[in-house]
Image (tube, rainbow, N blue to C red; front, side, top):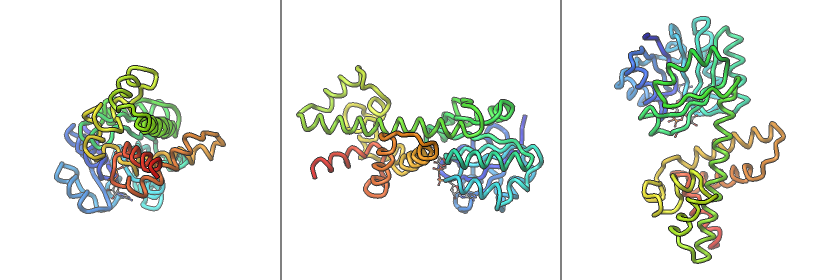
Length: 298
Ligand code: NAD
């Protein structure tokens, strides 16, 4: 059945995601602060709105794909999306945001008489373009059931992780594993170099032994062993280091809020923040191997 979907945030991820909904036959009213993003989405069949509130009025479902929690909360409150929506509208926030902000967004939506789900994604721009994203959803069963048909048009897997905020929790926990494991794999390659061990020999052993992980076998941080990894194209992203730094920052803030001791997660957040603020700004997150090698050289 065709619905009216409001889509707010038509950037690298939101633009192609909204286009999949159009292709599936939904009417999509879109809004982005940047005129170029709005124009690109409009070329893909999204109907451009003059404001977020305009996009939301008359929609059955509101999907947001924004940079951070403050943008989502501002959309819901100050920009009037909750007030403009029809009662009972389903709000799905797909942005990666702080768990506390996600819960606050849920509360605000429910208090305004709406339904709400957090549904951050993994899979990056490539996944958004190919509709192969994984969605991690948090919210009630009924909200999940109502959202799934839309999310399935933009992704390959849609996982219900639990109550409000559980989708964001799954996202930052997964990315904390990824950040720590990429640093561990990179440190092992640099140690191997200092011991005269070739990259290929370490790869052949670790990829078939207990060191096996995605950071090694898919996104290998040194050129050679995995020809498709960003290391083979001078660390062009891929998954950009600033996005990893952002996700680890969210994990670190959740660690502090929960009083959880996780020295490796905290250290990974610190190392990625420094890398992303310097040479790593335009690099894939696996480029951190170069920073590790330079520290050793220095
Ligand atoms: P982006 O910066 O390309 O897009 C965000 C868009 O939101 C921008 O076009 C911006 O103009 C717009 N925007 C900001 N405030 C707005 C407002 N108040 N009203 C309307 N539009 C507004 O970022 P992106 O790469 O598309 O990422 C979006 C979200 O997805 C982030 O939370 C990010 O962490 C998450 N994410 C990104 C990736 C990735 O690989 N890019 C992967 C997984 C998750």
